[in-house]
Image 1: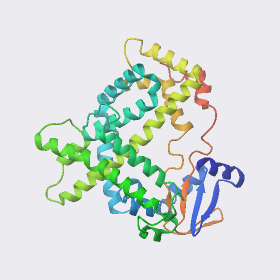
Image 2 (image 1 turned 90 degrees about the horizontal axis):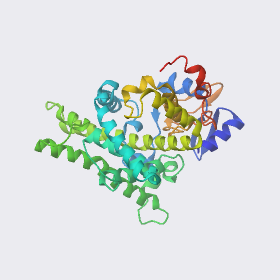
Image 3 (image 1 turned 90 degrees about the vertical axis):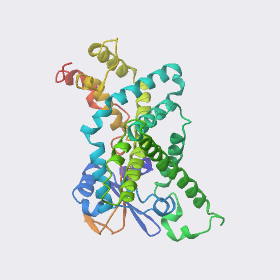
Image 4 (image 1 turned 45 degrees about the horizontal axis):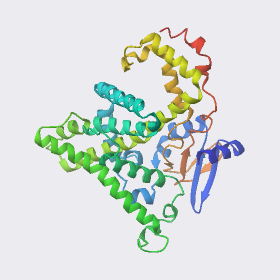
Length: 367
C-alpha cells in the first residue's frame, strides 16, 4: 500500500484524500505535514481507528498501540516506561550478547536458513527478557502461537482489507453464512492470541509459586503487584502490556536484521569497510559488545541506515481524528483515518550520505 500511496503523493502532493464508502482516509507523506498534524495537533490526531475486525472480532482493544488517549492508555504507558526505560533495559545486555552468540553459531552451521534464524533469535531474546522462557527451536509453542497471531494481525490492520471495517453491521453475520470467511479468520486468530498472551504468563506464575525460573520483566511485575488494590486488574495490565511488547518486538526486529543481510550482500564494499573497522577496533580474538558501540561509528552509521532505508512499519498504525480540522486550506472531517506514509521519501535506492561521505565523517569520530 505504501508504494501506491507514494505514487499518489508524487502525482497529487503530500496530503491525499481517499474515500471508502463513507470512510474518509487521509494519507500524509511528508515529515512537515506529519509533524504539524501528529505532533503539534496531537489532541486531534492521537486517537486510533476503531477497527471492527481488530477490536471486536479479534478482541484486541487491550493493546497499547490501539488504545485511545485516556486512563487505560496512561496506565499502560506508565507500565512500559517503568519496565522498558533505557536504564532498566541495560540489565539484559548480557542476555542479548548470549542470544547473539547463539545466532552466530546457527548462521555458521546452516547459513541458508538465515531468515528463519533471525526470526527465531529475536523471539528467543524477547521471550527470555519478558518471561524468562528459554527456547531452543522454532517449534516452541510460544513462538508458533505468537507468529500465527501476528500474521493475522498484520493482515487485519490493513485499512480496507475486510468489509466489516467499512460496514460494522457485518460482524453479526453467522459464521456459517456464505461469504463470512472473515469470522472464521477472526476466531482462529483470537485462539492464537489468547495462547500467546496467557501461556507465557502462566509459566511465570507457576515458577514464582515453586521458587524456580529465571529473572524476567513479568516476574518483577507480578511480584510488585499492590495487594491493597485490585490484583486482577493489575495482572490484566501486566498480561496485556507484556503481550504487546512481545508482539511488537518480534514483528519489527527480525525484518530489520533480514534487511541488514540484504544490504550487506548487495553492498560488499560497505560490508568490507565495516569489517575493517571491527578488526581495527576490536581485533580478531573476541566479539564486539554494546560497550564497544561508541568506538564503532561506521558500524553505527550502518545500523541507522538500515533503520532509515526501509522502515519496517512504513505506514505505522492508523490515526483517527477526534475532531474536524483544517490544514493548508484542506478540511479534514472528524472520524477520518489518517495514515503517515513514513516510507515515502525515505525508501531510496542508495545508501545515505552518512556512508558516502564517510572519509569526512571519520575525522569527527576518531576510533
